Length: 393
Ligand SMILES: *[C@@H]1O[C@H](CO)[C@@H](O)[C@H](O)[C@H]1NC(C)=O
Ligand SMILES: *[C@@H]1O[C@H](CO)[C@@H](O)[C@H](O)[C@H]1NC(C)=O
Ligand SMILES: *[C@@H]1O[C@H](CO)[C@@H](O)[C@H](O)[C@H]1NC(C)=O
Ligand SMILES: *[C@@H]1O[C@H](CO)[C@@H](O)[C@H](O)[C@H]1NC(C)=O
Ligand SMILES: *[C@@H]1O[C@H](CO)[C@@H](O)[C@H](O)[C@H]1NC(C)=O
Image 1 (tube, rainbow, N blue to C red):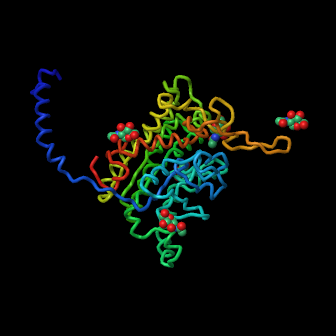
Image 2 (cartoon, rainbow, N blue to C red):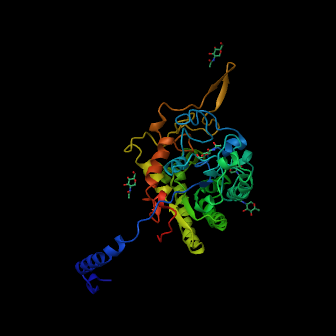
Image 3 (cartoon, rainbow, N blue to C red):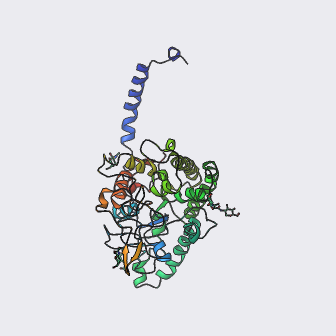
């Protein structure tokens, strides 16, 4: 269409816009300011990006030097320190989440963490020993949550210490429900030698299963949902090492494009699924958080932000990325009768983004948290502390 055919000139439009803004301005600013949610608890579902001890409790501890920076010993996390979910808990004034599966020293008064490293949304048809994926898929995590909900209330009635270790019934509808899962569903297809087209083809099924779990949590009273999309998996050493691509498929920052495109496809469909969920669940406040963009901007601007090579694992052994899937972070070897660690930590993890080829360092996690906390990467643009308010995006 030719611009001369337009009824208004761009100048008229500008004046009109200005008038509308002036007229609506007072109406908008008189809208009540939102009150802080004061979430009494967090219930988290996910994979290793947010596992605070479940896989360690069930299948053996993450070895040192995991945990070295903040906890000064292994703390069930695949990182040198805190994860994004830890910073979320801290910022809401809550203690770090105990893993539901961890029977030693746990305190669930302020929530529970059902995430396990290697978890997928869809149950896999392989064992953890074959493929490395956790048997605690999202459906199992929901079953554990549901069981926790019911049984915690029965046990709490016994009083005494149980009242100090378990949440009140009233905390469940007021809690924040966080999700960070899906990355492993994408790599699972590639491990089965599927093409990108084949992986894309099952994404709707994966998201259907995620939606179902969110509906089930809602049916149990959950109202506030904070859902991370999936990160740029094509920028991670373990993916680039395991599934090499051609030079033409490496983007200008050094990431493997095909895997990032699949992640973006997943995220597009996730966003659509959330639009549908908002319609289906009228009392839910569902926040979609664009972790992909945050992680990608961190990796692509690493040096500008004060970090070193974003692809070099801090803790690992050899190869282009200081990553070898057979000699993972903390691996030991016996030399002349003495055990020595051959996949050690780097000198200063605070300058690294990648911890072990798969996971992020505490410094990276802190940066990621700082970006998402105020809602600038959220849809709708709601900050973490206000995420109980349902707003139209
Ligand atoms: C596992 O096998 C079942 C039965 O063949 C199939 O329906 C399902 O999609 C498979 N799951 C995955 C993750 O491949
Ligand atoms: C569990 O944590 C809560 C919240 O920090 C605290 O009030 C409670 O005393 C703790 N329970 C025990 C048994 O230490
Ligand atoms: C995938 O392909 C590789 C190389 O051809 C083969 O060694 C491996 O067994 C295949 N994996 C599966 C699950 O089919
Ligand atoms: C192991 O011991 C032998 C004999 O004492 C020595 O020659 C060799 O250098 C030692 N290897 C290492 C890695 O320390
Ligand atoms: C949100 O926080 C980040 C990191 O501190 C900051 O760069 C950004 O400007 C903030 N955005 C808004 C809308 O306040």
